[in-house]
Structures are given as C-alpha cells and as structure tokens.
Length: 456
Image 1 (cartoon, rainbow, N blue to C red):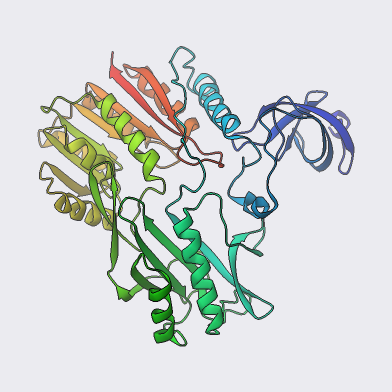
Image 2 (cartoon, one colour):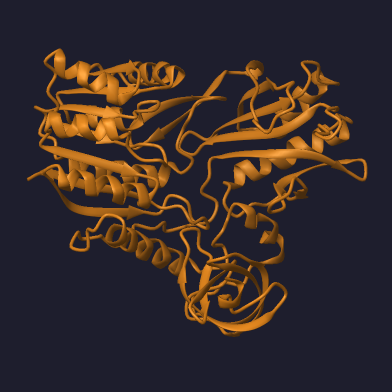
C-alpha cells in the first residue's frame, strides 16, 4: 500500500491549495493524495514540509508561501499564541465569512442532498474584534510571578497574555488586574503536576448592555491567603465589578469549575440583555458569549417562526430559556424543554424577571417530553430546535414528523448535523425554505445557521 503514497515524512514539496477542511485547514493534493495544512489558504501556492503520513491523507507544515491569497491576514506577534482557539485568525474577516458561507453550502449539498435550498449571504459583525463576554483563563507561575493566558496548541503550557483579540476589553482588563493583584499578594498559582498551589483559573463575565462585571476565582483550596486584601484591592481597581465569586475545585481534573461556589463580595449574579429580554447570569449559568449576534440569530428565528399571537410553540433544547422568552413575546403559549435541571431553574427565574407568564418549562429529554405533550392534547403549531453539536436525536425527528407542526425552525451550531437532519425532515414530508448562516464566533471555524422548514 505504501507504494501508492506519493510523499514520506520530512519531505519538502510544492503544493497548491484547492479546498478547506471543516476547521479551516488548507487542503492540497499530490498525485490525488490529500494533504492538510494549518494556516494555508485556498488558491495559494506554497512549499510545505510533510509532518505526518497516513494511508489516505497526510499533514504538512507551511514553510513558505510563493503566491498569497488576497484573504491572507498577517498575524501580529501578540496574537500568535491565541491560535489554539482561533483556527482562522490568518484569514481577513471577509475571507472568514466566505469560508463559512461556502462550507454551509457544501455540506447541505454533500450530506443533505439539498443543492436547491437557498443559502442566504452570511450575516457577519460590523466589528469582529473583542466580542466574547466571558473568559476562563488558566493560571500558572513563571519566574516567581503569576501568568495567565492561553494554552500553546496541543499542550498544557500557558502563554502569558494581557490582550485577547476575541475577549471584550473589560474582560481583558479584569484578568490582567486579578493576575497583578494576586501576584503582588503572593497567592500561589495551581501546579497541576504536583496538585499544589491555590489559584487555578481566572474566570470573568461581562454584561455588555448593563456594564456589570463578574469575576470568579477558581481555587484548589477553600482558604485563600490574604483574602481580605485581595477583595479590597479588586473592588477598588475594578469599578464595574458587581460580583466577586470563589469557586472551589479540589480535584485533579481538566474540568474548570468545581461544585462549591460562594460569594466573596457583591451579588451572586450579574444581568445582561438580549434584545429587550433581561437575563440573570450566575457563575455557572449558560449564556451566549456573543449577545450582539445572538440577537441577530434569534430575530431571524422569530421571523421564520412567523407568529401571529395565536400559536403554541415548543422549544426543544431550550437551555436557560433564551429563545423561549424571545418567542413568548409573539406566541400564545411556549413550552420549553431541556435535559439540564439547573438550566430550567434559570429559565423559570428569567421568565419571572421579565414578567413573561405564557411560557412553561419542563425538565427532560425533548424526545420523551414532547410525545407526552401530544398525549395531553398540546399540539404545536411551531417547533423550534437548537440542539448540541451532535444534532437532533433521531427519536425527536420522528416525534416532530408524527406531530406535524406547520413550521419547524432549526437553529444549528454544526452545519454537518444540520444537513443530515434536514435530509430526514425532507424525506418525512417537510421542505426547507432557506438557511441563514450567522457568524457568532469570528476568528474561529464555527458557524451558526437558522433554517426555515415548512410542512409540504
């Protein structure tokens, strides 16, 4: 078999890139054998070094680009360490949007066999830098000082940084101040090798609309040295701070948060808005990290639901009720279903916070709760689904096909599983009217879509 592989490890070869993988690696071919290369762009010609050879594909490393793409962006030195999370930071923003939109079209065609479904032009951000309202930064120690930042790709080595292109500046500032204050007070960083030390992660959240900041100190021990001074310093230096929390995680684990959370100062939550709906956000609440684009996404979902005020809507995978509360403003009744009990508690609190009374939440698997709704005589005119990356459970698809709502709105964070599920719905008697990609996560390869689906 090896005879047919045209390259071997450590070879240097010239190559032209003609496609991308789903996570934005450039794909070129040598005698029909595909080679994947990080930071390579379609249309570029380059010299690469072969770093790994498998039976049907290989990996290469970019050595020199002879012919550059107009979508290439030179990465400033201070941003290089962020590559782990920002797979496509080497593309201009225009190039990122093109990559995402093309990818959605490609998978709908390839996986969903839906070449005639219109894909609308992707909705990007006016300002794609500094959009994330949350950061969870690991803490380490170097030359007697605390460091905090991103892990070097494929390692647990922390690269110290004060500036992230994707985090809001208020978040960058909060992480920097915590690091400086804790360092000055001599609070030791967690050492994962020896399972010693105190401060594991600096975790910050910011309400973009309210200007409220939360800082969570994730510690290995319940005791924090010089805790009183730490609290005083942080509250003085961070004027937007409304909530200072300690989360205790004593385990040897990669999971960031432990079970025990206590308030060191201020409130246990902060508030933020998506559109005109207000949300209470605690240390453990799930909340969209880019509320600006979440509003765009939900407004599109609302448009596709086409509500007149008479409809009963079921929101499967409702989370903390973000979409449910949006829909409730235009629907007669909304039923939200979610498997995570804590999220449902948050959802009920958020409904109360906004005085929204025409929404009910239930804990359980959508594919189990929704058939019970049908048995109780609840007929859905519209079903909204926003599943995790693995897509809708097959049982849920069957349930929807049996329930026959007039419209289905499918919000997706994974175009491949969206394409697969749309294909099943089409076979079952539905038609996909259109798919709208939305860029929620600039500089990363992730793309969200919302699809309008009607009963044939």
